[in-house]
Length: 197
Image 1 (tube, rainbow, N blue to C red):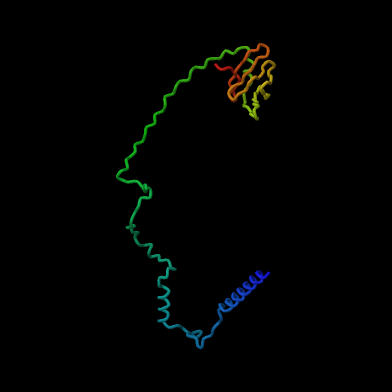
Image 2 (cartoon, helix red, strand yellow):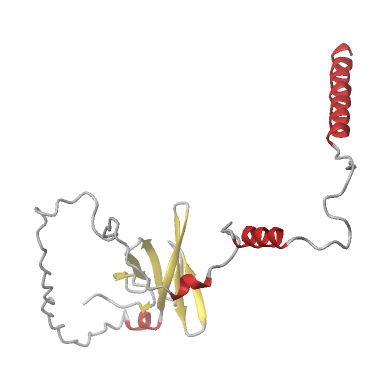
């Protein structure tokens, strides 16, 4: 508690000093024995001229309109190009020539040959691959047929005759249940399932 009392005592002393200083700093009205100019008295012309001269003295508060009529003079000091590189030697700079960009020759696309669809793969063309989901080690692919979406995992059967035996990022391996044929179909998003050409 002694420390708190000491802090309180110091603050009270500082407050007393601040009050005393503010009381001494307050301006007080003063009186003079006689007035220089009596009420209703006209000032002398010399005093008016001195007052006018004091008013016209250049104290930086008045706008000099006469300066607007003067002809503008150019700046005669040092000029510097702001857009010039700072650390480049002017003698060693070489003008760069623009490089011509030639368009690459277009390779004609090979003509589209209609694929011969095998009877085992024909029903798969109605399915569209939408994408896949990988959760842990299990991959699920999304196939769309008309307005239905099928979820197919490894070991699932769909379309009554196809079984998914393997699903990778690039291809789907199917086994036809009635014939035992193995079909490998590349997976391309938003495209129908079809055999590679």
